[in-house]
Each structure stands twice: as C-alpha cells, then as structure tokens.
Image (tube, helix red, strand yellow):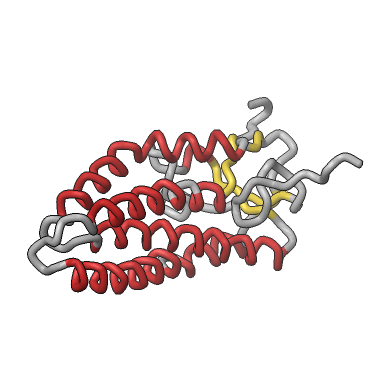
Length: 194
C-alpha cells in the first residue's frame, strides 16, 4: 500500500460473511436433530426452536445498530491510495477465522438434539438469518446515502470480524460503484453483454 493507504474491507460483507455458514449449519443440525425424540419430544423441541429462531434473528439483526449508524454518519471519504479488499477475500477471512467456532456450534447443536430436538439448530439458523437482515439494513443505509461503507482491515478482530468493535474508530466511504460487492454485501450483478 503506497503513501499511507489502508486496506479496507466492506462493512456489509464482513457482517454478511457469517450468515450462510450459520444458516446451513443450523438447518442441517435442526434436520438431523429432529430424528431423536429427546427428553422433551419432537413437538416441544421444534416449537422451542422456532421461538429461539425468531428471538435470535431479531437480537442479532438489532444489536449495535446505534454504533453502526454513528460510524456511518461519521464516515470519511476513502483516499485514492486506499486498497479495497475483494468480497471473496473478506468472506474467506471471516470463515477461516470462525471455522472452529462454527464446527463447535454445529457439534453442540447436534448433541443437544438428544435433549431438545432441533432447538439448537434453529437457534443457529436464526443467528444466520439475523446477520443477513443486518447486512440488508446496512445495504439500505448505504443506498440512502449513496455510498459504500468500508472499515480498515487492521481494525477488524483477528478472526476477520467485528466491523463495529471497539478497535474501529471510523468508517471510510466510497461511491456506490466501488468494489465488487453491491450495497448490503451481496455479489454485484454484472450486466449481461448484448
């Protein structure tokens, strides 16, 4: 990085990076977790899991919104020397940094099915859904301001996460066309050649 430029990762991409792994770990764990009847029985387990899914999705989607909003309002324009990280790199860094936690959560969800069938799997899936909702909210925030929000890579946690953690002092902003991810962190759709 020349002349003091910083490596920048998209905020919404970092948030969204955990959505798919948590969702699929949760869905698979819940599906397998329905097989044993457990201590509570399948019906109670699934109903408890549905409640946990809704609560987890809401909590994850709403937590730290004030912090994200404050950082977004105070975002400064990115320098021309800043290096914008590809979406795939940010996603890979998050997933590598959290792989053991994901594996442990998946194993715990499967193990807990012998007590309360499917509940922990639906809880994991709810966390994934909440991250997806939060990324969508960030996308709406970006579209409203007509900017993309970026965070310095060296301010992220060692596992590639926490884009609104204590170490993050400010966000950078770019135009809406910068980078390879659309507002909200999804892959940018390219126009088909005619």
